[in-house]
Image (tube, rainbow, N blue to C red):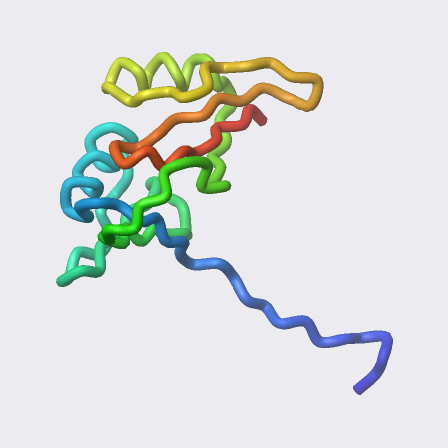
Amino acid sequence: MDPGHLSVAMLKLSSVAVVVSDAKKSAKWYHDKLGFQIRDQEGHWITVGPKGASIDIHLCAGDALEPGNTGFGFVSKDVAKEQKELEAKGVKFTVPTKHESWGTYAMFADPDGNEFWINEV
């Protein structure tokens, strides 16, 4: 192999797992509150995701919940507007829109306390 042309694996992230207490109830929340599509719902396998996105969130029902910052982030052109619209649908924000030197963001939680970021782009 030519050292100037290294082969790089072209792996793409397709799904991430979020532990929830009730996958069907959570899927309904993600659909009703965030407008996500319910993509697969077969047995314990339930996935949701934003319209047009190529990544799924796999809702994994389990007893060992560890609520808090998931590290998952979404982007929006206007975080404050997004917060207002989501709060009108009953979404709980754990960190209201904040302006920091590095950018504008907010954080919201699902019914199990899993937190997600929204960063302004």
